[in-house]
Amino acid sequence: MKGTQLGEFEEIVLLTIARLYDDAYGVAVLEELSERLERPMSLGVVHRTMQRLEEKGLVHSRFSEPIAERGGRSKRLFTVTMAGEQALREARRIRNELWDGIPKTAFDHLT
Image (cartoon, rainbow, N blue to C red; front, side, top):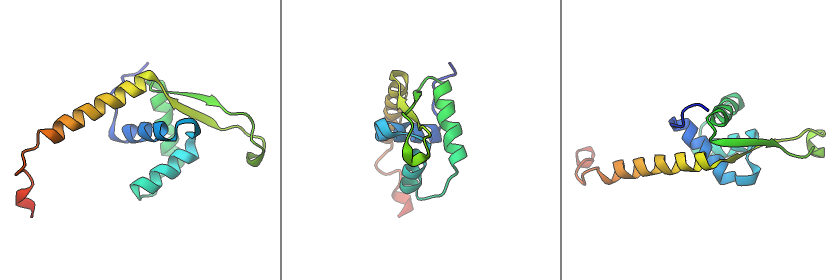
């Protein structure tokens, strides 16, 4: 298993997989990310990130039953592992601590 530290895009993909829960496959993750981030991205980038997350042990994949609408092909579905949940909680904790540590006047000069 590779290291469990998350890059920013990995964190967003992992959150999306958790959000989609039992329907997280490449195209669904891509569509959710494109809608939320309001920017185009390639399916290849999403797939590579999902594979990297699986190599790190942060997600698990399985194949669905064959689907007639997909010409009898299966979907590769991803779910978050316990290590993935722990990595997300740690990333959230760090972000919250950083936000909480920003002085109230830190952004005053911007207005």
